[in-house]
Image 1 (tube, rainbow, N blue to C red):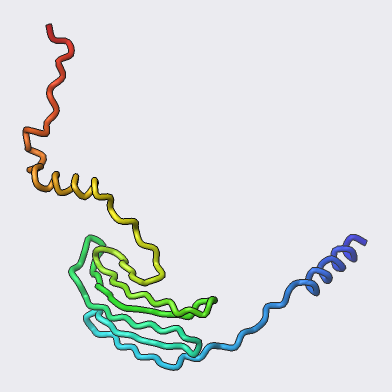
Image 2 (cartoon, rainbow, N blue to C red):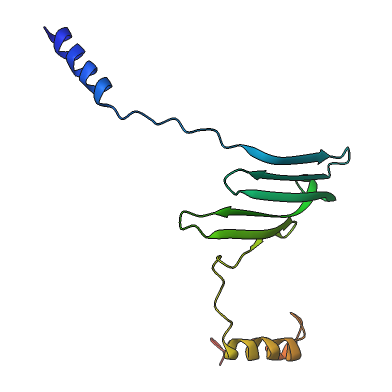
Length: 142
């Protein structure tokens, strides 16, 4: 009896599960790729529904983790709102640095902070600058 009940529940679960709709594959309308023996590369592609990407990579100095490639490129796509979003980027020893009109940007640095940075650059000479050393504490002296 338990087996029959479990079988019925399994059958109900299988028949009521949502079926995933198969989507038509999206055509790649343009594709170029070239990889160099030294590790450099160039690629570009475009799909039928508006995705475009291109990148170029060149070998750069090896870092502590081994050989590296500096890369620059761009990509764009059409969002759900119908707007085209475009990003250009550089990826190198300084990390991934994207730029795009739709990407958030940090707020401007307040004027007081800028003045403070200018002051520090002008008057602070380094760690050995005696004028910035703290006075020795006078605790325990008679």
